[in-house]
Length: 103
Image 1 (cartoon, rainbow, N blue to C red):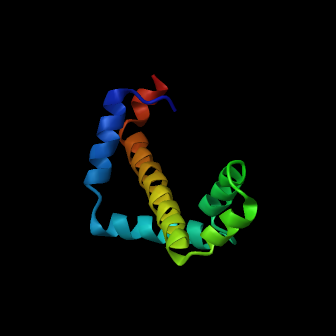
Image 2 (spheres, rainbow, N blue to C red):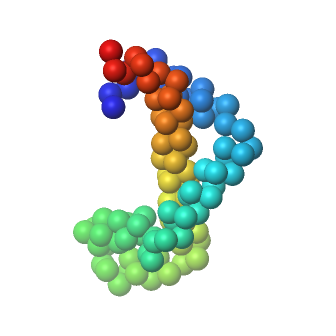
Image 3 (cartoon, helix red, strand yellow):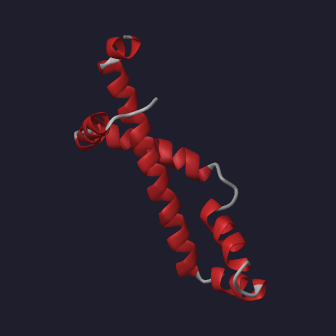
């Protein structure tokens, strides 16, 4: 689906208008996605990235730091939240404009 600037603005308004129930559904879906992962994808990606620039043992020690793990977990949670919100809002947008897409 190719979105115009106006489409994106409408979708952002849909997200801004989410009810508490909508936000609860978003949180439940985020939890399902994030908790189903056996490892943190942000930490995995950072390990690969940092190992190209620093000694692997140093990277490993730094990643053992709880604050680094918390940052990675927060990043994944926030990023997945953004995707789930957009997925829900695009679904609402499509239902509202279903006839226009077929034209």
